[in-house]
Amino acid sequence: MQTVALNNGVKMPILGFGVFQVPPQETEQAVTGALTAGYRLLDTAAAYGNEEAVGRAVKNSGIPREELFITTKLWIQDAPAEENAKRAFDASLRKLGLDYVDLYLMHQPYGDVYGQWRAMESLNHEGLAKAIGVSNFYPDRLLDLVLNNEITPAVNQIEVHPFFQRAADQELMREHGIQIQSWGGFAEGKNNLFTNPLLSEIGQAHGKSVAQVVLRWLTQRGVAAIPKSVRPERMAENIDVFDFELSDAQMASIATLDTGASLFFDHREPEQVNWLAKRRVD
Ligand code: NAP
Image (cartoon, rainbow, N blue to C red):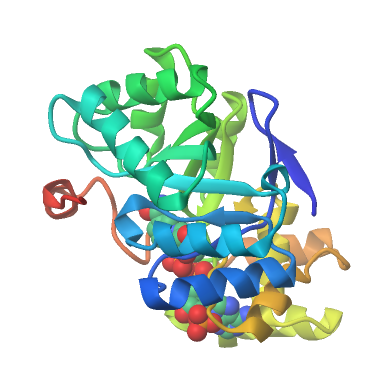
């Protein structure tokens, strides 16, 4: 598997497996399937409610820990955020049954992000989180965090797919050594992504599916990806994207699909801030 070097030297697979919206009772089987298909990066979160099942699948796989890259995420913490973030991390680690995580992300750019980040910095110093990063940070908040803290986030995991490409955001992240990682790389199928005529035509030219074209397009742009599927045949399809290359003309034509707007929600809209910021995860 191709890897990207994060800003602290940690190597991260460019393609991994996400488990958002996989029900806890189906997660162990899904993750076992993904590991069998060859995925070595698993992306979960405290808010997904399936860390225990991810941990069971990891343990039962027998795959040496150092061959895996496991990401989980910190949900918004009430004050005192620093103390509560450490408690939340301990709970995630316990649920996952691990001694450390490879990447710990602040899930949302809300609450006392400075307190949360300080806790994450000390987890990183202690070696309990090999790398730390953020998620859903737009450039203004991201830059503010970078400029006012000791550790620059290694990763920013954000919505990126053919209809919301984030090229300028990626450029800013590159300038600061922050790896961009796409969530919702297939836009969860919105906008009829899987039958999009342009992506289908490009796929036909390479003997590949639309899903494979999208993942190839992301990784060829240097965007890490974590597609989700509960179906073994799709897990295999989604990891089989390293034996073809999109031409410059094909990359340029996919660029025309960008609408410059989220297909889910904008983290800067007051109703979204209100909705997400009120949610609490045990
Ligand atoms: P996604 O990967 O864009 O799309 C998943 C959907 O595509 C599922 O409905 C899946 O159905 C379908 N699918 C997968 N492979 C396919 C294929 N080859 N052909 C046709 N359909 C296919 O959506 P996502 O799960 O929202 O995003 C990926 C990961 O990003 C998540 O699992 C999570 O780890 C992370 N994420 C993070 C955030 C954040 O705030 N940080 C937010 C959202 C997601 P089946 O399962 O039935 O195959």
